[in-house]
Length: 140
Image 1 (cartoon, one colour):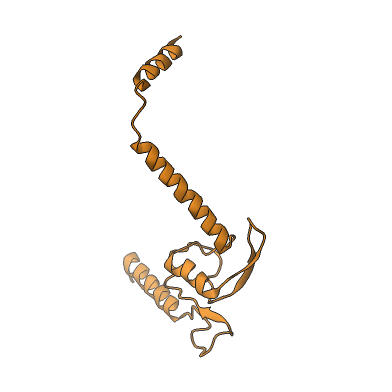
Image 2 (cartoon, rainbow, N blue to C red):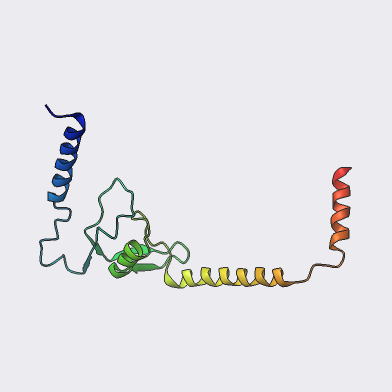
């Protein structure tokens, strides 16, 4: 008769062996993928915690930009970069075109430089006096 610990170890070893035997990607053995696709690397997608299946390959997708309403193409190469290199969520998709993304980046950069300039400005000479007045008003 085996102890509970040994039995548990045997069960876990069987489960690991079974997981290693399962073919994770049916396209691994195929020499060619469907035309216009790029193979997905499941090891690079391990950061995703999803109940759904991981993609076996990426294919170009069309989408409409939410800002300018132009029809755009999210290429398979860009998808591979987003999901595997940038570690984006597997459920996310592109929603803005390149030009609209650049506009948003420029606005953020402008706001950042403005805030940096404000931080370098000298405070108003009456700032401490005005703060005291403000505190006194709150007491009343």
